[in-house]
Image (cartoon, rainbow, N blue to C red; front, side, top):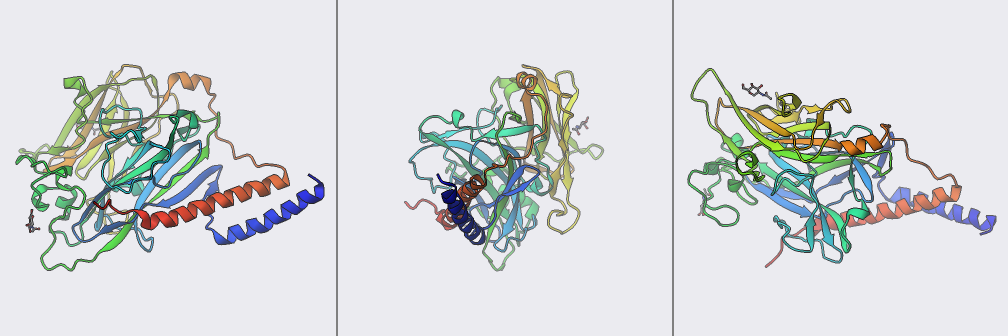
Length: 451
Ligand SMILES: *[C@@H]1O[C@H](CO)[C@@H](O)[C@H](O)[C@H]1NC(C)=O
Ligand SMILES: *[C@@H]1O[C@H](CO)[C@@H](O)[C@H](O)[C@H]1NC(C)=O
């Protein structure tokens, strides 16, 4: 190519780039070498007392072979304003990775596929439950004030083309469970999925509920209705889960971490299988001098490694949780932060954040086959239904640690040839435009399957 022609291409590219910059939102931001993008989930339509617990398949997610550095979320309204937990209780959101057969249409179905179909393969975390809890990321009401940062030099590796089975592509789904408590007779009761407030006799699969079943997900599934005050005007509104993903492009300097989730209801100790029941209830204390209800469960840890992050997930009433090593040392303890007022992010009575652990690299080790014990404490001053005691940890496998000198991620390399810059810019421009168009289509594209 002659120099003259290169210069011409350069100028054409610059003009196109300028046009691109004007026409599309600059969505990916870059700070200290970390990329960041804010996305909106499909729209969640609610009215007072309504429950939405839908699965959104093929959600927007950063593309390519990358290392996730954080995943935060919050509920916003149509105008983008944060919505109070007092109005829209975020029971949970989870982001699950899966592989979808190439050529299969993104499903518009909102239920739990269960992934029995060969077109979908769940690509979950590293364990340890046999069913469910396969998510990479997920929190509940605490999402606004909880740190999800993965410290350097670690990262959660996703989008590695070598891990995707041939004929499939990597995708992500979001399951969002939100309960609209505007005008509720008993807002806290609605958030605890108390069956007497939901007028249901069968679970979402049509199986009759056991009369002893007083509360939990089987009473507050998608499209159920919690009791609201008589004569309340039903105001419908649309909400979104706004989620922010931060990542860096994959490189050899990043040390991959594995995600493990423990559940205090895991039956492994008694049955030898990891049957994770997810929810349990807290009975009201019969004495007045002790209001702590403590539940424990043990599991055997499958690898040897170092803990780099830890956090619990509890519901209102929770007073803290800890993961102990076989010799009884605390691996990580994590506590709920309760709101104190009426501001968004500080809602009284609700868990608005969780404390997290960031052990000094290499200081908290777990051996292969070590028995770990999870302890989840709740206040038993009142009874609670449908509570949870989960514990997430990020672990770097010991064998990997030795091969990777600890080094902080460096900034992105910038191509040096001027026309290289222009071509790269154009490619990004095209990608952003495509993503933007797709998002526009997606926004109205999710409809339940018509039968
Ligand atoms: C409760 O559900 C039944 C049907 O299962 C319905 O006929 C009744 O109107 C519902 N009651 C309320 C208060 O929503
Ligand atoms: C849980 O409660 C028990 C009993 O009161 C206490 O010994 C333990 O330290 C508590 N654990 C946490 C993590 O708060």
